[in-house]
Image (cartoon, rainbow, N blue to C red; front, side, top):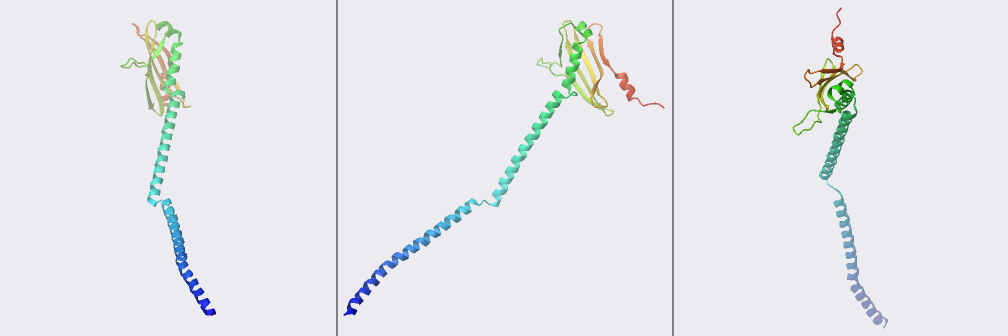
Length: 209
């Protein structure tokens, strides 16, 4: 009697177990599959973040080239600033030599009487009528530097041509070798403001024993 009751119960439990087994198995398969997909996606993310060696070399080369261009630009800018500073503020620049010589000529009473006031100074006249360029020449002789210059004076009576030459002294500064004005009159008069050529020639001559 007992066996008749127990056997049907055992058979019913086996049927339920067999029916639930595929569900458990399919759930474990889905879990394994999801873990594999997550691992694959992580690997793909890592692979995309890692750059090849060739691209790294290209980026390094680009950075170096940009840095070189920047340094070159800074160097050129510095050279330009130095040239402008040397031209405007150096006592040996042609611009400063011209300014000092012109001021000295304008303040000379002999030049004022000969040309008539007011007096203006100007450089070489271009094709367009501009008179800003002052003719000058730099050269070196016997280890010393020279600067030769010419510009013009325009008064109410006459014109004049300024001729000057600067010579570098022992301290490295410029001093006048000569400075005079040729008056545009019938006599072609000359007004001498500085003339140290005899002294410079005597200094350059060798001593006789």
